[in-house]
Length: 394
Image (cartoon, rainbow, N blue to C red; front, side, top):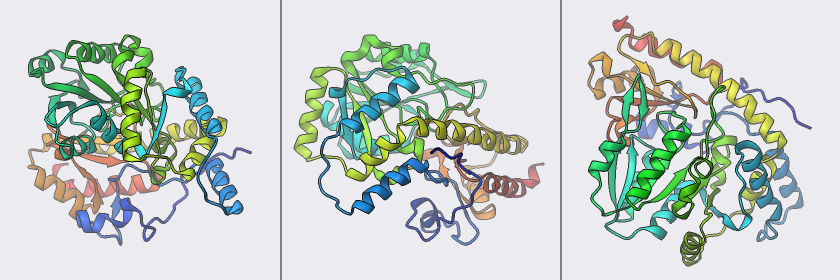
């Protein structure tokens, strides 16, 4: 039976092999004792109870052999995409990877060659560039423009940057770190850009369930069905339900030719899913999971309002309007400080570990990214520390 979640419950994560909490001191110098971890994109909340029940059923049985008969898992994915996003997915189009960074790497490997250009709309999720460069491909940065404090497309500017040696565009939809929910019209502009320059479009929609009240995400296959022959979709339950450690994601490909190419690379690399992740996804792509994420969106919206009200009151500091994700993208350029100074105030004085803007590519130089997916009391403590760290600007 579904029980409403208690997102205010404080859960100690230090000493649990948490990358977010146990690595902030060695990486950022923020002390484990008294520091606040607001960097790695996972949540400090327990996932839905249906996930715990599924895992307890597996451990009670006590046999952890190879997973077979994935029909319930596939149907859970199809149910979720249809009921939450109005998108009908064919069973044969679903591939399971070890998370979506792995899915991105497989797409780069399957659909491009060494030396090819891969287009990123920067600033954007830092793992994209790392994967592209590590594979011997070229990162082609197409900077987003800003209007009224939010990111917008600059298609004309991007057209001028194309050389004909680009083979792929990786889209982050909704956008991380800017939090934009791209409109159907914007998605069609991106699709037309890919058609015009003959690019495979990889649409990473891992945050598509994490939208603020009043916002609506549009999946690319519905917004631009005309590009089905060059579209690769990436989705996952991991961000939605705080199960990132399961390392499981879906690459969904409607086009048969692209599917064949992707399957060959998966087979060549011996990629197969883990049973724990599949059990978690099957359990949570369900009515109980839907009720949980609806409650989560309302709670995150409250955290957003608290954070923005405080940060935007600091002269020269501006938090980009957050339409989706739980990742606040904060611009410090108005303070007149160099990145080293405002970053030191956040990390050394406020003792908060955050992601540094330059790691997201061109356009991120004056920004820091804050993870708001934590208890309201932790957000309140963080904003009080930030107010003190920048008190001389008041």
